[in-house]
Image (cartoon, rainbow, N blue to C red; front, top):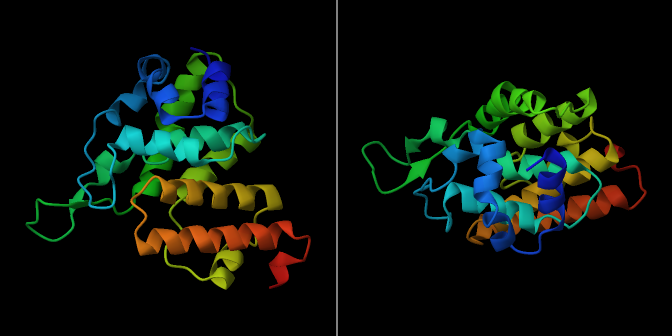
Length: 205
């Protein structure tokens, strides 16, 4: 598998099964992915293992957007979770939380995955690396937020980057059980995309 083949698969697959069928090839190309395969998240809102969650996040993105690193970010956005695992409550082995996992995931991608890509001849541009880090580090920002808070947090982004982060958050939410907080997040992020895409000066809201 090459980087181009991986991105083409992530951009065009129409089911999680299509990507999962290639997981051994993906893990050979990016060995860091092996930490996600079969990893039980042990959380009531996660119906899939960590790999399955990330694959379903990829599939929940719109197909064939031009931003390749958005799809790579979706595949890797939770790769740091195993390093952040804690009990939901002290002494509780029935469920786990993963505080700080977005930044840990971003750190792993920049420190391990990007050098792996370079070793295999893929040189991402500085602008692509910045977006990859941004999407992963901020993919969990807007849980339980209202529209003004979401828009305010994106004032330093350009329109495409802001909308794509929101698309990633929507896709991530859809790969959870659709509990009320996830449904609200999907609704608010969709509202934010509509507002940003409307042509109005969304940074002045």
